[in-house]
Amino acid sequence: MSKNDNKRTFIGFSLSANHQQRLIDIQQQLAPQLNATATVVHSTNLHITAAFLGQTSEADIQKIDAAISLMTLKCFTQELEHIAFWPKAEVLCIEGITKIELNKIVEQLAQLANQLNLHQSQHDYRPHVSLFRHVKKPSLNQTIIDEAAIKTTEMIKRVPIKVDITELTLFESKSTSMGVEYLALKSWPLS
Image (cartoon, rainbow, N blue to C red; front, side):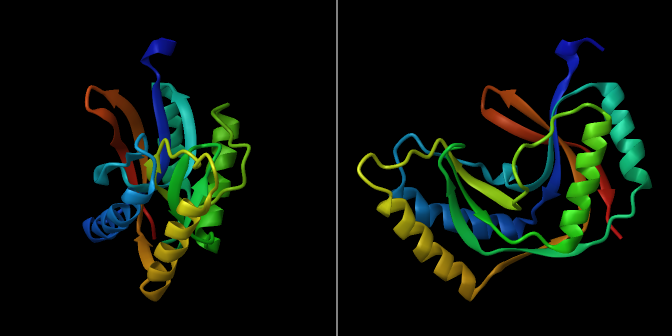
């Protein structure tokens, strides 16, 4: 396989239709507060990333499959409880505190990516779902985004989003004429 045949991949967790709808409702509440160039993340692309792998060969994908198939990975529930703005990435997301089970999965995937010489994140892991991309900080001050985030976070805390994580998925991030699509390549059930 040539370098051009590599796929841009990541490992993460899909969300149920109910969770997607909840996040769509949150997107609709936040959208009027954002800059005109902010783009909404399509409902089919809403997910929680566990590890971004970058350009991955077919041989690497086979090694990833073999290694994850041997791992003991536990089901868990991840709460998403507050809105966050990541200015450098220009992302508005909903995030939560990492559960112990999730942290174990993230650590195992980081070790696997290291063994295969794949992408290694330089940031501490924060479980999140990206809601908008290309979000710009207001030129005069941050208050519009801060106020919208605080108001939405207060609403979420009344009825937190609790995602039951029962499956790990290898996704390909594929550019299409309709934008980026995340295609599931392989899934592994959690015990």
